Image: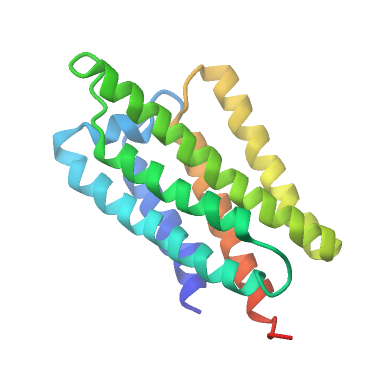
Length: 187
C-alpha cells in the first residue's frame, strides 16, 4: 500500500511541484538547482525521489533474485546511486565552474542512463519468464525512451519534460515490480 501512494501520488506530484513555473522543454532540473530560492526544495526532492527509487529497487531485486540472477542490476543500481549523489553535490554554474558543471551534467546523464538500463534489464528478464506480464513493462520503457529521444532531438537539451517522463515511468514500473515480486515465495 505504501508503495502505491509513493509511486502514484507522492513522487509524481513532488516532481511536478518541483517543475512548476518552468518551461518544460527549455529548462531542466539542474537549472532549478542553481536558483537560491529553490536549492533546498531541489535537494529535498532528490533525497525523496532518489531514496525511494533506491530503497524500492533494492527490495524488488531481493524478491526478483529468487526468480533470476540480479547481480548486474544490483551493481548498476549502486553505480546509479553514487553518480546521482555526485550530480546532486556538484554545482551547475557553467560560467563560474565549467569543469564541475561538466561533471555535474555527465554524472546526471550517467545516473539517468544507468537507472533506465536497470529498469530495462529487469523488465526484459520478466518478459523472458512471463511475456504477458513483461510486455507492458517493456512497452512503457519503449514509449519513455521514444519520448525522451524525440524531445532531445527537437530541443537539443535534456529538459524537464524528459525528466518528468522518466520519473513517472519509473514510478509505474516500481509499483508493477513490487506487485510481481511480492507474490513470489522462496523455493
